[in-house]
Length: 249
Image (cartoon, rainbow, N blue to C red):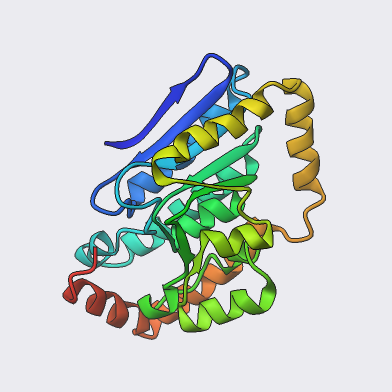
């Protein structure tokens, strides 16, 4: 359990999140994920990364229970820095990253999928930002890479979710597969990339990042500032305490 990495002969690195019950990562977990993605990309034998998860869903964001059980602000700051590191690692990975999403992809999960190069999803996958209901903000930067602007705003304000089918219609999800076929579908896409000249693919990743209209690192850091404000004003703790009291995972 935790974050694991395995390598395939054709140059595919497979990074798996397995943190029961819902893949809500601790502070350490976010940094471990960032390290795993960066290490995979720096390995000259890696041609493409597949990021996926075991369990009920892809990722449910930060571990709110850890945050509320830690005195002071250390866990809040750690979670924000850990998410920042993991999202940046996916975006800056030296090779393409394919996010294979099943079940729920919420909060920090959207940060990972939104910064990936390609998203493949199961037919039961759904995506959302429940941050407003948790007294926080963030990852709208990454959601805006998956859905149109007005839908992104509506999702932030109302905390509504979108399905993999909706994202497929937008072109944000490349392929939809049955849940038990998701891994194979992601690996098939990865194999098509791995078959290309690895030097050219690495330069393609670098060039595509260079022409992005939005600096995702700066944009996300700006969002995080409002999470700190909400916490200072008491809204953060109030909503997180209610989430834990309701038995949120």
